[in-house]
Image (cartoon, rainbow, N blue to C red; front, side, top):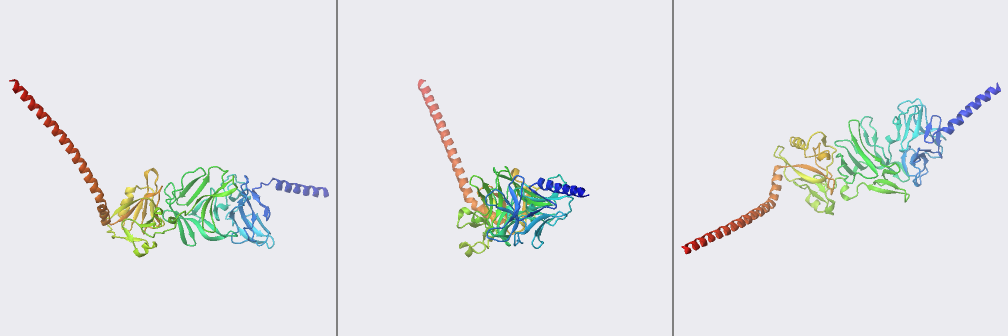
Length: 482
């Protein structure tokens, strides 16, 4: 009997040793836990999951960071709002398939992933993308997750993450800054997509809009002319009835790149430069004064090349407060010099190479032509402007605005054409302004014609006169002979 008991004990010990020594270093299984001081590392050893304390903070947090960048730059934090006061924290996965973060000293639950489905064999895996996922260990489909950290971004957008919104579940894939370098709790600054109208990216401080990317035009956001194909990453924008999001993909997995919202509100794309062992700023949102949201107010455009007087009213508009405009206070914007007639006598003025106005309250149809777009706008008294929604293949689709136009700027490259509605009298005034130029052109053409005709007539006259003289002399010679 004693021998049988020893055999059973030996069997379980052997099984336990076998299981613990063959576990993948990137996986947490049922019955396992990760304690403070222990980590889980992704298969390619790019990302690491564990406990840390930021800056001078004494609080402990569960997070994911870059394993080998020297700075241990944190990409995701689980318990942003609930730091652990000591080093007794541990992470485990329960039978329902939820990740649970507890304090060992009190057994208090600090954070949980709150699984919505029950799995037969729940496991948590830190993927090479930096995504912490919960899945069924018996499911061989690599894309089947019951939960993933990518659905709950913090201040960092990693490659293949979505920045946008799930319109079915309501999941908000947005970035929010840390409060400070010592506190990863959500700060004042956010970077997110507003799905209303034609979706756009906004940087905000609280509810105040700081920056707007403009709507997607098939190639880029209309306010990001610098977003062009490059050797580091590709990018995509998806907008349908289920979801709307922006994402980017690294061309070479050896390159590390991320988008970060700093506690100061600065939004940067950073790339790891291995040669100097440091993160380098690849691009930054809001590089100049004209990127400040709605700096010039309604019906005005910002032109950075005319600094410091960067704002100017669109044609057919005049400053609402001329006195303030003269002292470079533009927020009240511009108003029409002539009211619209709400009939087919109204027309449109074309503005080239601009960042399209705020599309939060616009209407879009990607399946009609620009000519049809113009007709639709003209037939609606509330329509103030129109443009192509897609610039590819010469331009397709339709964007219509039904309110004041805000946050327009002139661009030196990759801008779009905007057609702004004005009264017929404004079109006539512009025609009159163009007349002197046309008149000079017409006079110049007349002079050219007169000179040519004069030359031809003169040459013809000389030839005719010469011929007459020749005939006369010939007759005289003949008469002399007679």
